[in-house]
Amino acid sequence: MKNNSRYKDFTSFIRNKFGERVQKVSINAGFTCPNKDGSKGVGGCTYCNNNTFNPDYCKPIKSIRMQIEEGIAFFSRKYKSQKYLAYFQAYTNTYAPLNDLRIMYEEALSHDNVIGLVIATRPDCIKNDVLDYLEELENKGYFIKLEFGLESTNNETLEAINRCQTHEDAIDAFKRADGRGIHLGGHLILGLPGESKKDMLEHACKIS
Image 1: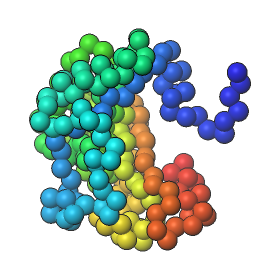
Image 2 (image 1 turned 120 degrees about the horizontal axis):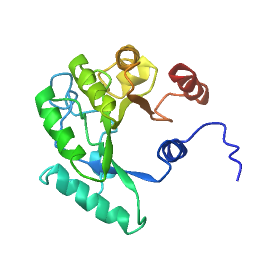
Image 3 (image 1 turned 90 degrees about the vertical axis):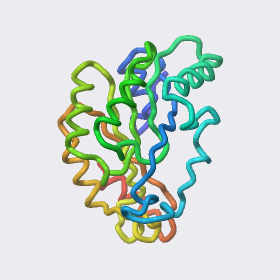
């Protein structure tokens, strides 16, 4: 059936790239956030509640491999044959020294059915040495995707939601990550207080 969509959705992109279904398996590796630990702010963003989207099996008291195993067991009941991307989802998943990140990421990649990483983070929390390392993983044949929490492109909105970052931080992060073979994504929250339909459409133009 012909796809008349005006954009390419992520599911179609993944299926076209790998020729099969690939499922993200969420992981809570116990990270915190500079907007919670006091280095930038306290209390987090006004909307922050990771428990609302973390699956029940995602608990940092469990090893990364155990969370992957339980996630695969959950999804394999619905889909018999597929590969998986380890999705470091909760909080800021590059907010640690590189050696610590290397141990966590490589524990996930050691699973036979995991073919890559999806890493959610803040654009003000990605250092160049981490980008260098992720580029190395990409060059080894792993699928690596960075998902930056942008939320809005309006600095006034970011201040209102206690984000403790600016849109300029996002531009800088994308520029430094570009050209490395790493797949880049940005999360936006539509309908934040004070933003109009025009503002939301302008987000799309700015991100593009």
